[in-house]
Length: 239
Image 1 (cartoon, one colour):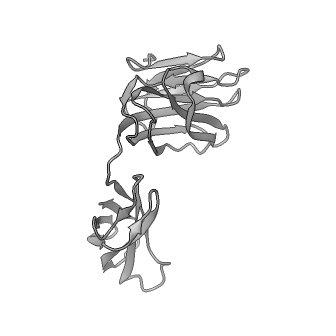
Image 2 (cartoon, one colour):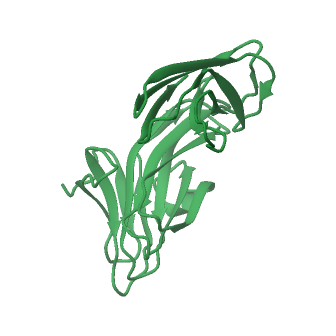
Image 3 (cartoon, one colour):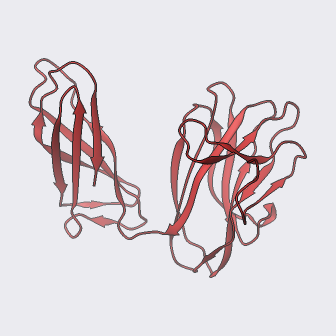
């Protein structure tokens, strides 16, 4: 600390504060990248990954965690990639976050496909206004996009009215690939383990229909569950 990871680079275009590493704040892991504010100078600072040998026409999955430390101050960041660690080479914009201000870590997943084979760099551009606060970046990874990648993203229950037994629970799953998911060919089983005020195990399988890239589908979990005990129920859901 505060050096950035080996083989990565940064570019300080505003001549003020820039990206460095800190001990991870709550919600992040290990060491975390941070851009911290300057009272008079807006952010204009890039962090670049090491060079990645990518194959043209092959989809890749970029995952990272980002956020800020305030609900009042607003941070801004863009994510791009290109063939050199330089602003003029960051010609492929993948994401823009103009209003990061909820003091909550967010994980984002982006599928991108380079046109030609070569060495590429992912660039994270902090462009917050002056006199804001801290912008965080962590857990950056790039892998070949899998053909199958389905994750549970929510648990849905009907409005609770008395009695609260025999409640039907549904899970929402998301197709994280760039390919349609044919559930008849690749059925998805969801399992939920419940602890807390009540305990139990639920499961369900989606085996019909097609889920478009990035789209979601509902899976009914069985058996029904009894929520009559007051308190907090914790769900661990897997596919």
